[in-house]
Image (cartoon, rainbow, N blue to C red):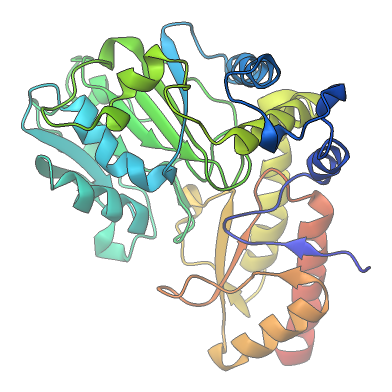
Length: 367
């Protein structure tokens, strides 16, 4: 079988080593005689898996004890509602930074529960940049500030963490909330500036079906009236994510991914790899007048790289020939067109090299 490189935006490529280990343990996990898919979530076998996943995540991301780690279902989209339900805490409004389609989805859902102040937006330039912090207009009485550090569709990424106290003249009691679905664990992470981080698993963590939530303990237990039991973060925090049956197999795969990350040298080593991978592709795009990237250079994503061909009539031919070379899922999102290469942690450097080599050859023929 020829080598395949999967550039899908999600569900996305997983480390080959992880898939191989999952294959080997599929029918009999560590001599238990059971597949992880068959285990009781309250049995000692799975409880040991879940405990190690949390321990490894705390170690990799240096997560302090006063943050709860929750393994939930419903994907990141469920968090668009759970965040306001849990974090309004008697306030009537929340602030959102609008940098693309995932920000907009979060905004529209939050409007069902509170007034939403758009503190900054990049809509004026078709979401091709990150608004500078000194442009943010935060409501002093806001319940929290929500942003999306990496917009998967537009390929725009914050390469800095917002300092809300700086915007508010020293006031530091406004929780910062981040949807890190598409860049979590791809770079060094300090969770302490955040009140809450959430992330769908299917890009850098594991398979679809799991959403990770990291929440500061003091924000728990203050949900709005009428919040369903399953939508209270405190419900899951009080029961170590075992109030109901969690997505057990996805948690197990996440554990294998975390072990793989540790073997790679942790988040600092992975960030260096991601910088080199993205630079390789961006350098080619910038050196050519055949390919273009619409995103401001300072705000380009390391995870999702959109690009267009000078002659859009060649798009289908590009995708056809790329597929023949084993380069899959390069078509851009239907809302923006063009191409998009998603190069998450599990995409090897060799995959990006192969893509760059193909792009050079294609330009030589059609440029």
